[in-house]
Length: 280
Image (cartoon, rainbow, N blue to C red; front, side, top):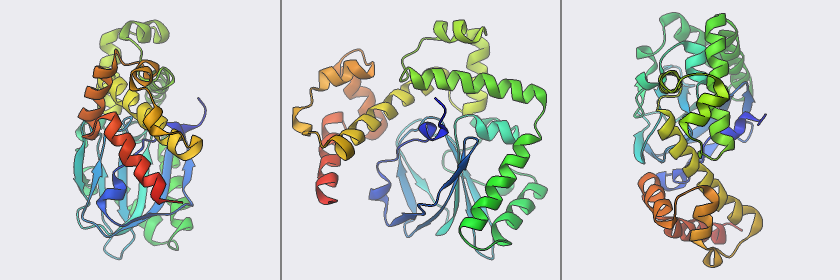
């Protein structure tokens, strides 16, 4: 898998959270995506992703920002008064690669960037956002700053980064259906080291990352059917779909999907079908 966009998760309930506008001119490089967003609501309703950490930077005169950690369950995430700004997403492990901060230390509900970054880093972020014109130039400046910080990491950090990337790609390519023994064989590392490394760099243990990756594959499957194939949702066999996605059986599929989304797959499919029928 060469395209890092596969690592960015679907958030199907953002539409239910209020009026959200995301700039189509998203800029992306090295597992970092930057876009301009505006919203009129006070929070987002989010589901677990593949292990992304997010950063929202205000583009107002009173510059501030919020850093969001990795979700492990469906949750309402506060926006802390932010109405517009730059939304920076890091593919799994990239945030810790760049800042050498354990991903599990970043709270899913959000943390003031003053509690995460140094004063020097915040000053450089402020200059990147506020000393450029709004929109694309600011996006370019923030992305360039992140890439420069990433280039400054040590050889040891680069080695760990490569291992995490290998693990997450194996998990993604298998749709979350991979055992620890297989990860050991593929990476030549012990299960204990893999457990510690993934938890530190991604923010959740490998088993949880596998479960959430499988859930995200299920979401992508449903959305792909609705947006591309125009499939009749009523004719989908959930038992066959469960087997294709790697769940033990339909009950396992229903249970995990509902745990992460609040809806069983059939109800979610109906909800998404109604949305596709509305947008023509």
